[in-house]
Structures are given as C-alpha cells and as structure tokens.
Length: 342
Ligand SMILES: Cc1cc2nc3c(=O)[nH]c(=O)nc-3n(C[C@H](O)[C@H](O)[C@H](O)COP(=O)(O)OP(=O)(O)OC[C@H]3O[C@@H](n4cnc5c(N)ncnc54)[C@H](O)[C@@H]3O)c2cc1C
Image (cartoon, rainbow, N blue to C red; front, top):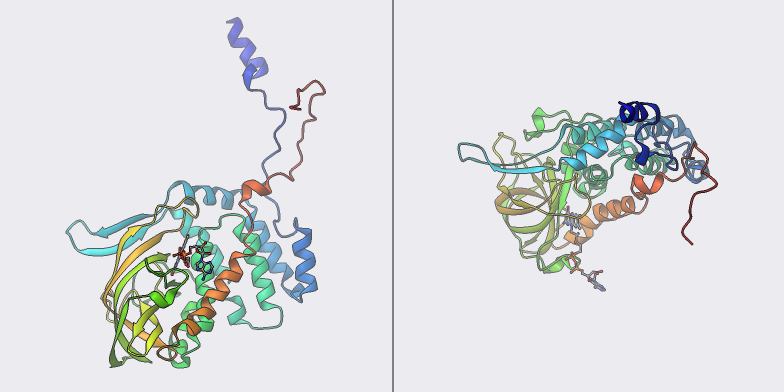
C-alpha cells in the first residue's frame, strides 16, 4: 500500500525525465530556418512565401511526423503474383506513404516549376522540397524523379505533349491503370545494371524497333535486367537500352493503353539500410513496350537531363529529423548536481 501511494505521488522513481527537450512538432519548418528564408528572398522566390509557410507547417505537424514514422516502420511489400498465380508485380505500402505522397503532389513538389515557370520557380520548389523532406525523405524519390522527368521527356515534344499534363497534375492517383483512366501520374527511371552503375554505356538491355507507336514516337521492345529501379509503382519509366544505333533513352509505361500490364517484372525489392519507406527493385524487361525519347545513340545525353535534376534534389535534401531535433529548448533546468562526463 505504501509503495503504491509513493508511485502515485512521484511517478516511477528510476525514470524521472529531467534533461530531454520537448518534442519538436507543430511548428513551421520553413519559418524556423533563417538561412532558408534568407536564401529564398535573395534568389527571387519571395513571392512563394505563403505557400512555403503552408508546407512548412505541414512538415512540422504532429500528424505528418507520425506518418513519416509509420511509412518507415511498415516498409513496402512486393507481391509478384495474385493468389491464383497470375503475375501482378505490385508493391503495397502503408497508408502513411500514400498520405505523404498525396500532400507532396497536391503542393506541386513534383511539378510546380513546369506548371508555372516564372522566375524563381525552381528556387521556390527546392525550398518547399527541402522543408517537406524533413518530415520523411523516402517518398521524395518518386516526387523528385517525376519533377526531373519533364526536361528529358521534352526531347520528344510529341511524346511530352501526351504525358506532361498528367505528370504535372496536382492529383495523386495511385494504382496500375492505363494513363487514360488516371488523374495524375508519377515517373521513375531505370538505368543501372549489374555491370553498369556509373558506367551506363556497359548496359546490355536490348531495344528492338517495331515501327511507329499508336500514340507518338517510335516504338521498341526492350529486353534485359535492371539492377536498381526505385519506386516501381510509378506509372512510367525512363529507361536506357541498346538500340541498333547505340545506347538510347525510352519511355516505358507500366500499363499499356489497352489496360494490359507491360512486360515489367519485379524480381525482388532491395534490402536497404536507409530510404526504407521507398521500394527499390530489381526488374526484368521481357519484350516490354517502350517509345524512344531523343535520337538513337544519344541515350545518355537525353536521360542526363533527368539525372541532373534528381541529383540537384539530393543535395538540398536535409539530414533526417532526428538531427534537427536539437534546437528545441529543454523546459526544465538541468540540476546543478548532475554529473557530467569529463
Ligand atoms: C537507394 C538507391 C536507389 C537507386 N535507385 C535507382 C533508380 O531508381 N534507377 C537507377 O537506374 N539506379 C538507381 N540506383 C543505382 C545508382 O544509380 C547506382 O548505384 C549508381 O549509379 C552507382 O553505380 P554502382 O552502384 O554500380 O557503383 P559503381 O559505378 O560501380 O561505383 C563504385 C565506386 O566507384 C566509383 N567510380 C565509378 N566510376 C568511376 C570513375 N569513372 N572514376 C572514379 N570513380 C568512379 C564510384 O564513385 C563509387 O565509389 C539507386 C541506388 C541506390 C543506392
């Protein structure tokens, strides 16, 4: 009885919390970053500050932070077949992943500068992406790749005219369906092969021309194995393959216009140390339908536009939130008698 009343009076005696900062949540991530605010104003994007405060508040909200934890605690799962044995090649994600992507797309983090290319548009988008990524960075991969796909896609203006409106839509519409049935699309890229990571010229995936496509551009069938293909639930991929004229860039949809799935088989998901919320996969292409982007033999030149934009996104991507938690001041003063390591 005595013990019970002591616990009620003082809490658990060996677990007194006296030198922890309060949780850093429900604050404006953008406003809290003086260097970021100064940079945005200096680089001509002050016009975007209302939106940056909005995304900053969302990034720092308790709900978004919880979604970030859930998206990483419950990582993506690969389902190669349905229960009747048909190949489906789908990856399922926790609802938190979808919620994060929905917010990112609604705020144009994947497309704002292409929708409204005014001066400072890329600065504004980079600042928004920097602030928002502090909540969770894995879902930034398909956001970044979609943003980066547009300049490469524009190598073939007729193809770009078909896909760009949906790639720049502000609606996140997940699921494998033909583009004609979707309100928004996301894009990925598949360059890397086992024998060729940095050196993509060593790629062995083959591309056989089959004539004009039903939409726009020249159609090919791609066969080969890609060692690293992130966000495989994206709707389309920019892929490098060896055409008769050399290494070439292609646009490969996951679902064909008639609703059939393209021959894009996910062999396994990568077991990664970080970036766990995001699925990265090994894929097999077996006469997969694709449309050429740019000239044959100019694949690196075409896709490097996309690579550059994704790499630019990697550099402002901030350290994880745990590293950002230190500025929150401790509420309780440290006891004068506490022992410090010397
Ligand atoms: C989380 C994650 C996601 C990824 N997602 C994708 C994706 O979606 N699509 C995709 O196509 N790829 C993806 N990749 C693969 C990525 O693009 C490759 O890992 C990258 O290109 C490096 O290739 P590699 O791993 O074969 O390393 P290598 O090219 O073998 O390089 C190994 C080492 O050698 C060095 N090196 C290489 N070449 C040179 C050189 N010429 N001079 C000096 N040093 C050199 C490199 O700096 C590195 O330290 C992903 C990788 C990771 C880790």
